[in-house]
Length: 60
Image (tube, rainbow, N blue to C red; front, top):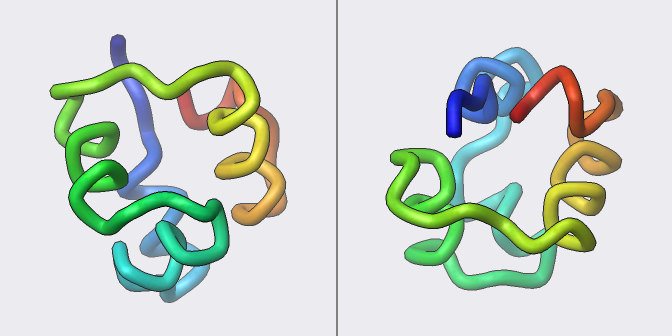
């Protein structure tokens, strides 16, 4: 899965821990998604996009 999650997170000046807390997941789970080691469930992808003020299509 090609994603631009890290770039979007940095545009919002958020740390990994900040975005993971907003999305309700652990920092490690977030890191795994950002590093392409895990694919988020649809509901989590939507939550991440919402917290970044963007769409799922723009980050994944």
